[in-house]
Amino acid sequence: MLKVLIVILLLAVVVSLFSGLFFLIKDEGKSTRVLNSLIVRVGLSLALVALIIIAMWHGDISLNPTP
Image (cartoon, rainbow, N blue to C red; front, side, top):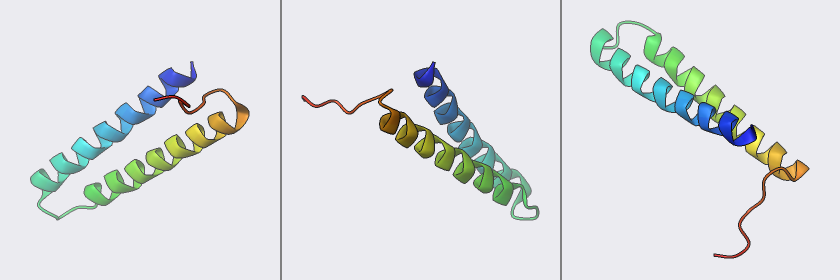
C-alpha cells in the first residue's frame, strides 16, 4: 500500500509538471496558473519526501544494504 501511495504521488508531481508547461505555453505569462502549478508541485514533492522519511523511520521501507 505504501509503494502504491509513493507511485501515485510521483505521478501527481509529473502531471503537475506538464500542466505547468501547458499553462506556460498557452497563457504566455498572463495568468497565475503556472505559479499555482509550481506551488502544487512543490507541495506534492514535500509530501512525498516526508512520506518516504517517515516510512524509513518506522521501518516500513529500508535502503538496500547490498548493491
